[in-house]
Length: 280
Image (cartoon, rainbow, N blue to C red; front, side, top):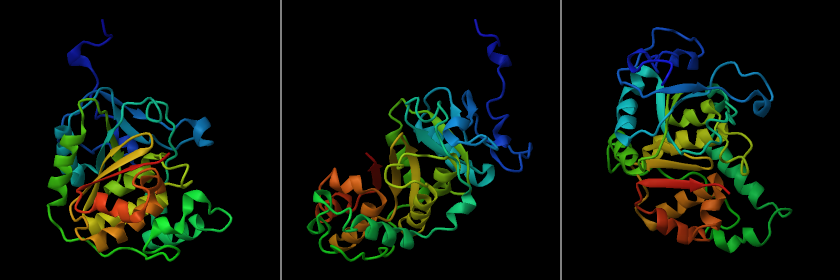
């Protein structure tokens, strides 16, 4: 039998104030949480002593409906919800490396895109996996950021629908003290794209830009995966090609281990209201 009777179990929301730098104890949630606990970064993995826990993690899977209620409560709570996969790594193992949300301000989506495009096509790196023909019609010339999409759906309502579709009946919940969804990537210290980019803050800067230009909302994270709802997706082939170029610099594996070329990948994402990424 458990040490605590059901009615005596501690309030799972009681320690959430420790996720914030100011640790104000007056913060409350209007949504009842399942049982869970704070996740501290592993000091050996982080190579320093963490100042505070990285995020809160539910003990059991949750529904997309709970995600939706917590997303609606975010403006008041300051906690962004994430559906997380059920793998022990990195969540329960604390294999995360939190960065300050302020660090994201040091990066721009445009500069990141140009830098990665240049690095990926460096003659010292270019090989069979980096055929310029695969990047047609841009090839060696980075096109820069795509124009904003036309909003087709309410971004928050679409994110809620996406969460309900993605919960799969086996998805734990994470809560991150972040002022917007994009920032949760850096604040919680997600390392899923480590083989592509050492730091998460630049990727968060890109997702910030997608929030603004495409009505994107980050809904689910895995060990090396990410799912975003997209309320203003590209709907023309030309626009989708431009967005595909951004996706290539953000997650090359989506193209090279997927359709293979930007032109084929553009057709995959044209009109799609969910963007899914996977890093090898």
